[in-house]
Length: 375
Image (cartoon, rainbow, N blue to C red; front, side):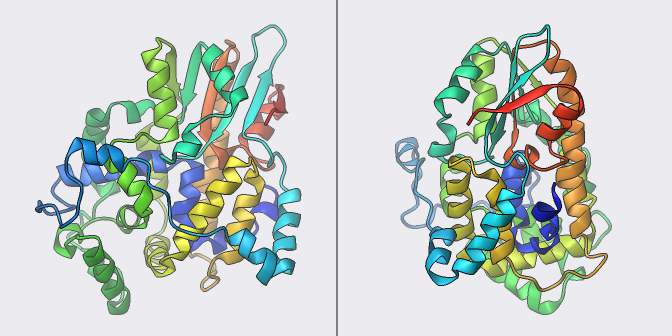
């Protein structure tokens, strides 16, 4: 990432989960509720609450709810134009920040395509722009971050084989890692979601935070069976007989998260819960920017509205940036290269992996490919 783009990513603690929707780890997070239920650590079996939709017809009708929240940048235009101008300056300084779809060319092989995704089920996100839809339709090979998501049973078994990635296995619980005030906040939020603390107390905070921070609209669509974008792209390609490949394993994604400092995990959980309705505003704003292909504006926007409470050295934010974005950019570019060399591939990865001086677009150019923004 360019200095103007990433110099304050360490201030994004409360928005780490929102970043994941564009950086890719929601691919792993999307399996967490299923895994938790299967291992007896999430929701207690309970009768449907009053008014809850239970049959397939009703669920289908609820599959496309509109997310609550307001556009933060529109509000900022009236309330704080100077801050908005700063966001726009940072975005303008962000290399490769204005396109979702990129054409990749190399002499002697058919062109391939790179598409930045958002790992959500929003129907507007699922509707690919015309150029991207055409590129996908003509591709022989379709590549996503991890094909493990196409076999939930296998993925679940792999994750449960390494319980230390998602659970405390040393005899401790969440209460042993956080103070009483923060623990009370967690318990309150769990109660609001119909979850018992006793059933989730051994979950790692990043996993629990992922469950609790999912917007209600996204949770409803997922519960009704809606696929997120990467999943839909891969499933459709597989159904059409195309070759489907992955750039990472689910294990690698979970290792990236689980390896971050516990202090970072705890603070991220607490701050994401404190955000409350603001997280809905962030989701709406982030989605609007994505749909307009203004990818380079997303992190500056999040930085501008995020809490700046703890940026002490060793808190884990720099490592978050390195593990979740920069390191994975390099892995994706390296593993994509031999696929691109075969020609006619459509590669879909989280949109934040495309931008910046160390993003996938820049790395592919350094490797000798011609990479051109399309839209």
